[in-house]
Image (cartoon, rainbow, N blue to C red; front, side, top):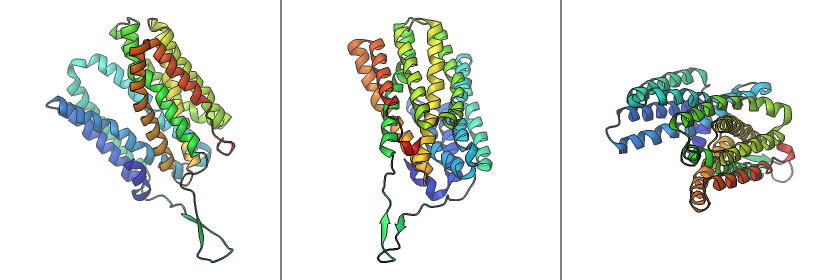
Length: 328
């Protein structure tokens, strides 16, 4: 929320560097944490850096990248999450007993990326959108205020909430389902998460999909595939090949969906891309925060597989809350 509000005021570079600084500080605190309270603060700080980074990066691309490749650039940058999960998975397997050293190395990587951001992200404040539409008729000083929420904002935010709720099942309880219900061992379940990260990079293709099909059809197809992957987790939690395949499809489509959501947000809030992206991702996170306890309660009441099936149905519902014609 703070990043969304401050990006138009201070510019993309300042907020992007701030995100890197927060990430570096949070991960460094993890590596040096003397107790669990400090460890928790480090995790919260490091995790919050992604929320800080999204609005300024979206704003920078929207204002500095040529229009023909702008949407593709947005989704490629967004797919970096998959690369990070891919790298972190093997590190978790190989350096579990040396997690402080691993975190210290990651803090150094955060610092290096922050330095790169300082050179790569353009500085300066973005052009301010006009707050009023002056009319020639009547008094020259009279103005009609622009609506606070542009056309299509309601659909954008509803889909973000539904996507967050639907995806919370796999993100929060996916590994518990594979191990607890499916009886999968720790190695196989960890490999599923490594595959989840590797195929998440496929979400970079969302920009090309949007360019070819438009936001609406791309959203429907990708959301249904994501729901199908959630349903496969529920139906075959003990099958290693199916679990690995479902993890791969889930993350590829999830990163693709966040990329489509990002492009959609910049189209709806064309005069303030940081606002559109910030609100969409905030509501996505709120949907996940609301969905996780609901999935947990359903798992207790009717069992994890049926709870995951319910989450998949929410995803199918979200697939058909599509953009209006002017946004497609």
